[in-house]
Image 1 (cartoon, rainbow, N blue to C red):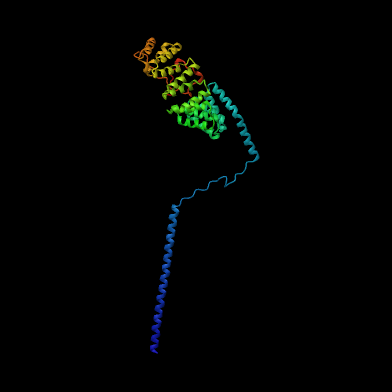
Image 2 (image 1 turned 90 degrees about the horizontal axis):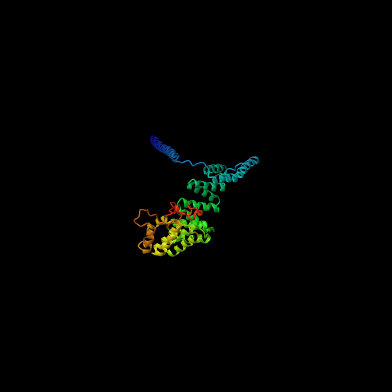
Length: 364
């Protein structure tokens, strides 16, 4: 029995120790789980705060016609709005007429004020914009004219007057490539008027592409045979290409139409001189002297355009008869074999007077 009791106590002790050991392991596992859970919670909290700090708030969605259906205006409100618009629209022709009268009287500033006020109320009236563009041009505000004409063409790209005005204004602003682009657009659209060909020719001449200007100049004189500026420019373009035969034909045609054009006399005589045709040179200069006086024509022969015939006896005799010589004190003028800018020249002012001969506004 003592042995049995002792064995029992030993087994009980081992059972208690085992139970205690198992309990300790369970407690350790639970503690580890708790600690890991706590650490996971801390990590989650930390990462959440970082993400929150780095997060960029998306902008609120804009309110559009699709998202919110506007309440339709009441019948009374719509009627009032239309009534006001009709009153403003009906005033537009009157504003244009008043502004045109002011421009005709030379009151450009007043016309501009009238049109600007009208456009404040009715900003899309094409006629007002085009007239205001022309008024700005009279004030040398070409850049403002261009903006208005572009607005007109945004409204109506096929507006023919606006297209011509825009191209002409670009020429005046020396924006030759842009003017050429507009002119080619008009030609492609079927506008083959002399005015459009004139714009294209002027642009090509100023871009030093005279060979491309010649077809347009020939078209102009076929459509408008009395266009003195086009005939002059055609002759000059041929001269620049070294085609003196055709240049002489152009200048002779112009002289047949108008025997009192000093520029044409000069250009024709210079063409003859460049080909060493002294007799024809002297004959042309003599005709010019009979019209404009020997003192005026005598200044021409100082120019280098006549160097090729200067030593010719016939030309030397003419020079002596004019009372001038290359060593004289009279200053030699710049060559008149130059393009006349049709945008700056008044077509009705030809024939040019002697005092207008050496034009400062001609295109080099």
